[in-house]
Length: 190
Image (tube, rainbow, N blue to C red; front, top):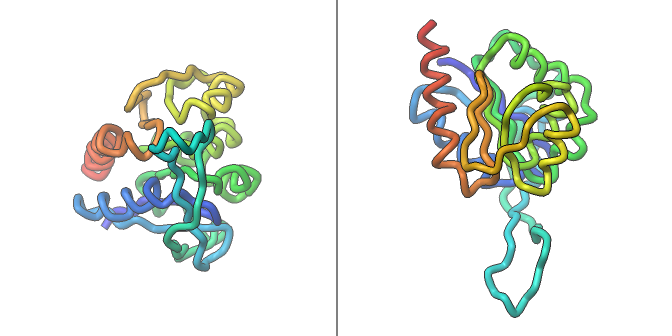
């Protein structure tokens, strides 16, 4: 079964993370969750409360489910993986400093393997230097992570640029994960 790498850390957004964990096996892909080390991480839920009487102009964060990483970044051989899924949440804010994860991320872009990213996952691809000349999307407050690193921000549900598929937030899962799965199926067939 072809493996897909999904890096996480404390503060991973659970809807960004669980959707590919459950969706990709439906098409015969094994999702391998990795973290700075193999252990259980704290997930979070991000939302803007729908009640106008409770004003929030930023996303509210609260604890959510836990997610177990089966392997640490140092232990991952990227040649064993067909694709990469960069989920969001607060985790990418500190994961983008992990040199092992940046090395892994560069591998997928350099080898033109399928990559999906959503929300703050863009921070990892940006820190790895993989967005120059690329068109992609993310949550609007992270657009600077694209443009500051030489990419073009597009405010759409799904943006496809070569091997890269991106979505803004977990609300876009149905729109950008399907093309990612189609890319993986084509890549598996090679």
